[in-house]
Image (cartoon, rainbow, N blue to C red):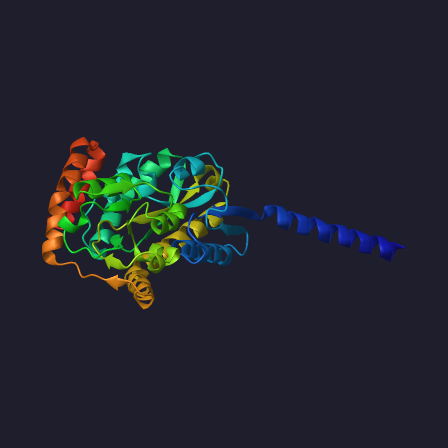
Length: 330
């Protein structure tokens, strides 16, 4: 009888310890609007794996891709602030309407290559961190996209040939680029782009190579002009209240995993761009080299976008801009 009581007590204790262990574990949903195979979603997957390893499974991040949680993108600063999801990837240019300091990454032809984009990211990061904190969140890492080019049905080799294009853009300054070159911008959700191309509502898109692969542009478009109009970035943000509920060891592990992911993503972006462009070529897209004359011409006709932004920028945003320009010696 005593043995049975001891056994029962041992079982209860074991069950209690197991319950305590389960209760101590934290599970977060992470949001991504990108498809499962997109490099930004894969970065979230890798972050989740790193965090699980570093915390011994005490913090588990479940990645929900393809907009499965119902959030489209522009509202994500509010979504994370309000705790509707504790962790989310968000396109910085997509949320720039909520806080003007983020608009610097949307300025066309400001960062002219990946090296300059990295300098811009390093310069802007302290300003972005302060802005995110005001929104009740913390940036874990910032991840780049390949440069945004022009994808078209007809070959384009000059600004004159851009006139009349009906182009899908993903932010305000992209729309201003299209208007400056004589085209009509269309602000369409990414999910609507393929059908709009197929039905002739639009005939061109400003975006990067991974997005072109995601959308199978080769089925509805023929040419790619790698203009590097902007080099967009995503930030991966965590709700500060959720972060502060974690113990210090878990917080440190999460921050360390974010630092590692930022380094990984910036190291791989050039190779990623080449890989995705090659996939497009293999499927029938023709890459149209951008001549120095075309590059200079489009930079000139869009200069007003940059000067207008600077004229209306806050003192903090101006300081960030001037700091970057000094670093790249322009």
